[in-house]
Image (tube, rainbow, N blue to C red; front, side, top):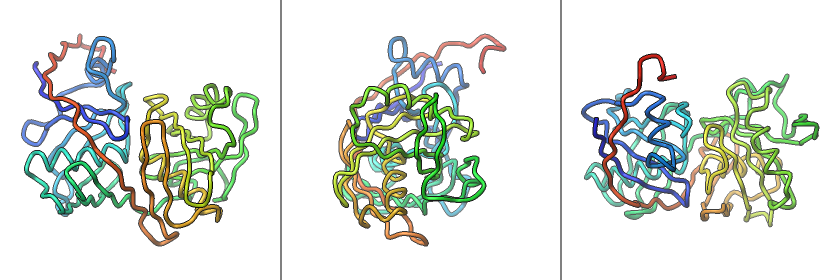
Length: 286
């Protein structure tokens, strides 16, 4: 099977985008892993499929898979790339907006420029059962044991689960170990994206994210949203925040409970390609 794809990125968070509007999604988990291999495949943090909408109120649906073949509920940098891809395909006009469906629900995108998109990411969810996170009640801070260290975290869902840790030094050596351990912590039954955030001032954050299923990434859009939401809930940031990640900068706007959170940032095309998908022996697709 030969598969046409677009390689894209949002501030370094990179994607392979597949046009599945007519023929359906063609890959199983083993083939997703093969495509995502950075040595023998194409390589990506997430794979995105553009498909017909399931929800009649939406124009399109997009699926999300991590490089390890597992599905994801939401991807902030990815949805901006989907919007730019739809514009290039003639399905979303410059300056226009559209409601598109993710695995975790519908979002609204606005195309500010050919490669700049703002996205209504919905309202952050702090109720533990909605994240999901194991806790008796919602709180601004939770203390958990991670590999023998006690961490104070914030927990929130932006369509996928996030653990947010405020730190004074993003270069601290211990973060390399804590990121994977926090992503797989038992109190997050579906795993979590682990974000380590440095508060520079009330309108400026720096962030590193270890994503479940993808590892350390250059950027995580939902992670930027989660970090801002957790610190906003604590009263530590204003309604508009600049978030600097290793790959670039995002703007996050949120006025608090009862309001949608908006994320604004770039989306870029890298190249178009064709991949010869390997046949997977029966029984090895998991």
